Length: 127
Picture 1: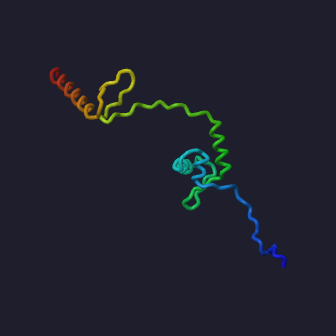
Picture 2: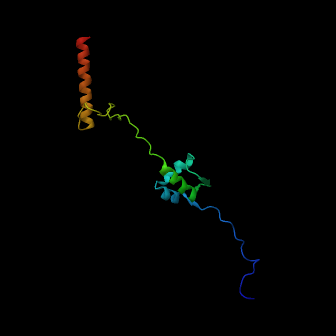
Picture 3: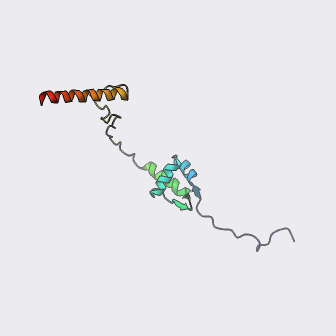
């Protein structure tokens, strides 16, 4: 014997599938969090996303090609947002004239109560 394995005892060479990466590697390629990748994969927005058991896997080349495609798209236009409501239920100060220049929620509440009482007094005297 020459010390070499015979051809019959060697393992057959398997064809290698396209490189699959796990969710952490996909997140690193895309530059986003793992949760964002999960959300995109669940919505079927990422190409080649496959869930094997409880693990998401992705074709690395497809992810990179998708990223290049996304980079070539024009950016999304800015969405004009409405002002949020303050803790008092009133619309947060917005625009030219901002009412209730309160420094805290407690003083804002007092100011709201005072203005409601004043409005009630006006209605009782005029009505």
